[in-house]
View (cartoon, helix red, strand yellow):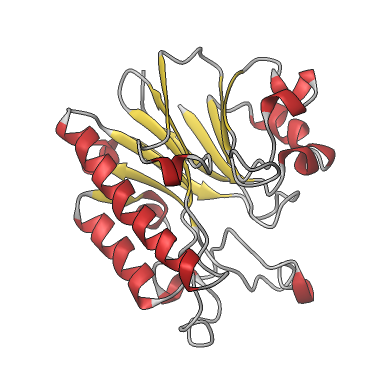
Length: 255
């Protein structure tokens, strides 16, 4: 089973830049999209119901902001929205889809760069999300967690760690939460296969930094430990354009 995750930074915008050509070429079993910035009813029919896929939407209440969507080849058995906390769920940040072997979570974690209030919101979301995942595991669920985490975990995960040590996305408390999350039994699947540096998923639009590969790895596939041996590959597609993020992929043995 091949799953992709991509922060598209505006679904309508990325469609104009070849999104469906990419989707047709890759033909994944599922694709998780973050920051769609649209409601299903505001989209054209071809986007709202992509050929060959079932589409699940969880937009933010605020128009043109946040929101997630999942396209799956198989009709979802069960779909869940949010984590049960209104102040987070109104921003359309989580979809959970149940498959036979695991639940797939598509998550757009908050960005903390716009000030202390949003950083506090981000950290509160982090803790609430971990609690949510632990509750699901207590119910016997295995989890695949995809999405834009908005934090580079270690120095190897961004080009200029020293220069960004005081910037949200690489703050000690944000990185410590990723440590905490992993310590609870969630595996960073990409690093299990690719320990090498200079592997990024996001680049600023400024100063032509993408061409220079001055970026950050802030998009992840985490899997619960019992699923780790079923992961066949976890990879990044930095050459795919259309957003300030690139797609990331996971190949996992599943029914």
